[in-house]
Image (cartoon, rainbow, N blue to C red):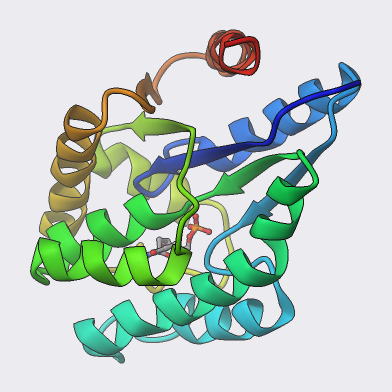
Length: 210
Ligand code: TMP
């Protein structure tokens, strides 16, 4: 099947359902015969997965905000160079669970780093590529954190930050969606899995056929 490259990103606070939905979209596109890959951030390459371990595990205040920003950027630059760019060059559809908007929401809005500084670091880490379509999952942070902490994994460094941090992430994402209406679609994370996945598939197919 001939197809154009597409970078689709899934964004949102903790426990919003984006990881489940990115997997459902990946399966649906594959089944329809598209060449598609699914990846995540922080991570996606050997080097970036090592940085991921440092960033998402351990005590929530163990890294200062600026070091955290630069570690996410270092992981992302490797991921973009080695994987995402190559796949886009081959006209593949890339589904990425979190990307630059996570850095703006978490390190910028919630971590109180200057938003223009975060945008500039994001720009440096991705070069000329940018998402074509972004699903921003919205959920009340109290409910999201409850869902996420029930998942029983070691990657709880961000989940364990206080509720104000998570409220700022939610507000940040709403600002980001408002500022980027050309690519962002807000998804109500409290809707049923099937309803959300149907909506996301339709919007993705519309984008593919544009
Ligand atoms: P995950 O929960 O989606 O697997 O993501 C890992 C954690 O990393 C999550 O708590 C959000 C956080 N994160 C940031 O703070 N900034 C970023 O730029 C990215 C990609 C993730």
